[in-house]
Length: 364
Image: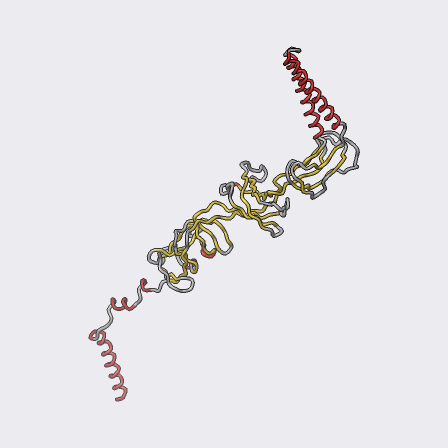
């Protein structure tokens, strides 16, 4: 009993001393406790990777699928009657302007030329002989006008006969290649008046033709440079020669022609081609595709670090898509675009900006 009583007294004394310590011993105030707890401003900011961008004049490349087309293509036809007497070309023949393609039977055209020449010579001789008589007074001067008129009529008849003779020759109107021959010597012996003889194609220059949507038409001007890649892998450079002012009624697209030099004829007519036209330059910046994001309002743009390392959202417009990179407009030169962590921060949030390699960077 004595031991139990001593233990109880000891516990009572200990409890009394513990309660008294709260009154006589110093303790932390509310202000001190708050100072110990870290404040919101002392929370370590979220770390993001940024990259500075340069705004430069950028020429957008409009790439379209099209085809090559010969600059000039014509069917050579006969201009008078007659049977085909001679054919001087075959498929693939290279001809020059004025070369004879085919010759029709004479049909007395040469004889008519000879007769007309003889009449002209006769009328000229008569005019010269009687001119001397008129000068001597042996003949009245009124006869000179009559003789001169007869000579003019004879010369006109000669010109008509020579023109008819020339119609018996089918000639090339310009340099080119014979793409097709539609007649044969020794074929049906009937008049070829107005019949097609051969197809002549001019391959230099060659055209690359594309159809452009109305929304893209405003950026294309005559003289703009263009690059053409054929389905065969061959590449060529040229310039825009023609931009149609009238849309196709079916597709509502506009015809655009790119002129390509083709002196050796290596670019064929009618082959599939990919045409890249360089449009007028615009101020744009090149950013990674992954940097593009949407704001809470649904606007396309990028998040940047501005001011005192605060996040801001900048709306942008896409100028050109380069698969892993995008050319966009709307950014200022030197803007610090967030390329890593942009989807984990919000506008106005304080962040720690660093280059993709890890080094810290200063905001311009």
